[in-house]
Length: 373
Ligand code: NAD
Image (cartoon, rainbow, N blue to C red):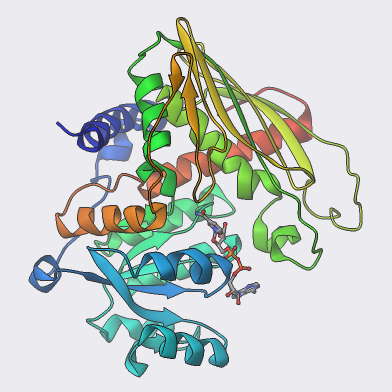
C-alpha cells in the first residue's frame, strides 16, 4: 500500500475514533461527509472550481496551482472588483458566464460548469459563503480557519449535510509529504510514544490596514491565522485531540497595530496519551517549526508550514523527501474524493475541532486558567 493511501486510511480510522470520542457517537448518526454526485460529475475528468475572493492566496497560489491539477481546473471566479474579473478572465480564459460577483453569486446554482466552490475570503466571511455555496448544491472547500466561532462551523457543516454536498478545509499540509511523514512517525510511534511537541508559526505584519488585524473580520490575531498550523501540527503528530489547554498573551509592542487582536500568544496543549505541545504564534517575529520528541528519537520540520522549501530531519539524519506543489495536490486530492464519493481527508468536522481548540486557547489566555477542550 502506498504511503498516502496508508495515511489516508489510517488517519480516517483514527479521525473517526477521535471524533467519536470527542463529540460523542451521536455525531456520527449522519455520515461524516455525505454527498450526492450527479452522473455528470462522476464522469467528468476534471471538476470545475470557482474561487471566491481573488486576494493574495487565490492569485499567488491557488490559481497557478489550478493550472497543474489533474482532477480539477479553474472554471470560474467570484469577485467584487470588476477590474480583477477582466484581468483574470483574460489571463485564465474564463468564460463570461462563469464570472460572478457577491450579489449574483447564488445564481451559480444554475451553472453546471462549477462543481466546487472554494471560499478564500477573510475568515469571518467563510460561514456566509460556505452556506450560500451549499444551498447552491455545490461542494465546498473553505480556507482556514474554518470560521470565527464554533457555532458558525456547525452551521456550515449542517448546511452542507442538508444539501448533500461535501465540505473540506484548505489544510494543504495534509497533502504535503514531510508533514505526512511526521504523521506517520508520531501516530505509528516509530520512535515510541510522542512525549513533547514544539510548534511555532509567526510572521511580521507591517501594514496596519490589513483585515488580519480587524477582530471582526479575522476573529483574532496570529492564533487564528498562523497558530492554527501549530494546533494542526501537534494534533496530527499525536493523532489525538487535546484534552486541555493553558495559554498567555504576549506583550504588546506595537499598540497602534494591535488594538483589536493579540500581537503574540503562547500556549500549551495536553493530550490524552500524555504528550504535551508547547506552541507560540506571533505577528512580530518570524518562526516556522514543528518538532516532536518520542521515547527513542526526535524529528523536526523547519520550515514546516511554508508553501515550498520544507526541510525535515530526524534523530537518524535528514528526511530527504522532495517538496511538492502543495495546493495542486490538495485540490486534486479533494476533487478525487468528491469524484470517488469518498470521505474528505480534511472535512468540516476537522475545521470545527480546530476552531474549538482555538477558542479554548483564547479563553485560557483571557482567564489565566486551564481550559478543558
Ligand atoms: P487577502 O486580503 O489577500 O484577500 C482577501 C480577498 O477577499 C480579497 O480579494 C478581497 O477583495 C476580498 N474581500 C471581500 N470582502 C472583503 C472585506 N470585507 N474585507 C477584506 N477583503 C474582502 O487575503 P488572503 O491572504 O488571500 O486570505 C484569504 C483567506 O485565505 C483567509 O481565510 C486566510 O486565512 C486564507 N489563507 C490560507 C492560506 C493557506 O496556506 N491555506 C494562505 C493564505 C491565506
